[in-house]
Image 1 (cartoon, rainbow, N blue to C red):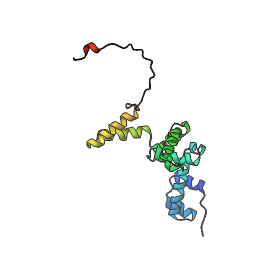
Image 2 (image 1 turned 90 degrees about the vertical axis):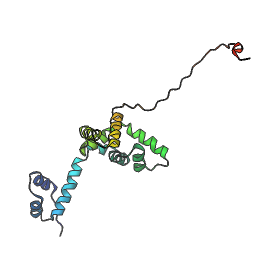
Image 3 (image 1 turned 60 degrees about the horizontal axis):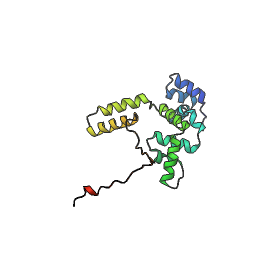
Image 4 (image 1 turned 60 degrees about the vertical axis):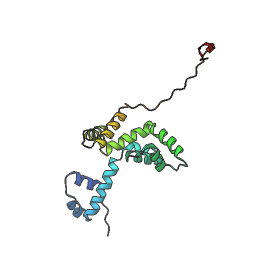
Length: 173
């Protein structure tokens, strides 16, 4: 016979320091059931509210970005797109959306990936003994601080007036 776990009571007891084994006995369920339900309840509580304002595809995009995928790869995973170019366009549009940016930050912070934590890890890699890892970490750090501006092109339309000059006297004869 399965018993329903009272979520409020479970959280009250667990947050009060009662061992899971004792909670399980008190509620008449297995320790595994208590552990599983606590994990579910805590993951729901840790879920940033801003995710609820996004569409399911946008939520998936955010999760893929936090998991380390590129904008294009995240868009491919989250949306049913027909081409890489479509995924690039969607990924770029989403990455520039303030709500998406806020959601990415909120999820990263909920997972403990604050800027401070990331900078500390980056510092550990920069100061590491493996030169290839250290160089990659330095490059990543410089990119984070926009020390590598994106490749830019400039198109200039100019009207140039020129007068022909007779250069024949300078030719070898």
